[in-house]
Amino acid sequence: MRLKAIIPVIILVISITLFNILFLDQVVKKSLISIGQKIFQAKVDIRSAEISFMPLSLTLSGVEVANRKEPMTNLFQFETAKADIQLIPLLEKKFIINMLEISEIEVRTQRKVSGHLPKRRRQKKHSSKLLEKIIPDLDLNALSKKIDIKSLINIPDLKVTHASQELKRKLVSQSKSWTTLLESIDIDSHI
Image 1 (spheres, rainbow, N blue to C red):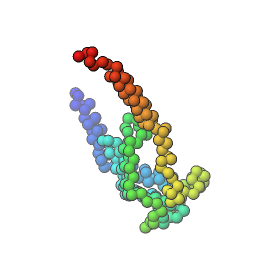
Image 2 (spheres, rainbow, N blue to C red):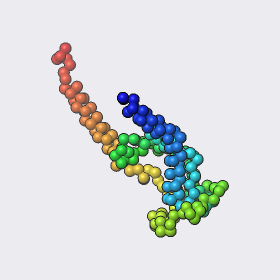
Image 3 (cartoon, rainbow, N blue to C red):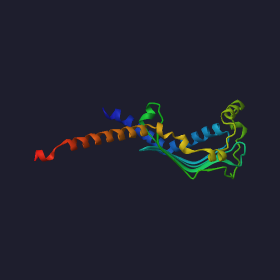
Image 4 (cartoon, helix red, strand yellow):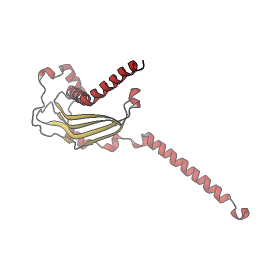
């Protein structure tokens, strides 16, 4: 009698596992390409996308994003990008990345094939005007020279910084109180 309840659960687990093994990486790759092409209005190439569940991570390889104004030039490209993501916050609609690692990133490289999208895949004109208002001239080469990473991360405002400073204050305070206590003890009278 319990066998009738267990068999559908086993079939469901096997089906989900097979889908993840056979199709999930391709679905993620095609979704990321589609989203990237809508954002940049130019061809986005991704050699491979891999999802790992233990721990939850996404690895992209061979990413090239074409420049819509210069279709034979990449806006940027990188060899690999890996993001380790916390699973539990995703259930709370929060997206927390523990580690993001990008290797071999390059800007304004030449493409072998044009990055121009066919008309049927291009977004409507009103959305491109919106993108131009948000990002009027996206020149990553000039931008990379102007960006100061240290200015992007305000170290005094990080929670870790505040916690470490508070811990340091407590440690100094405890150290002083223990030193005072040890100095006040008369060891000779207790012997």
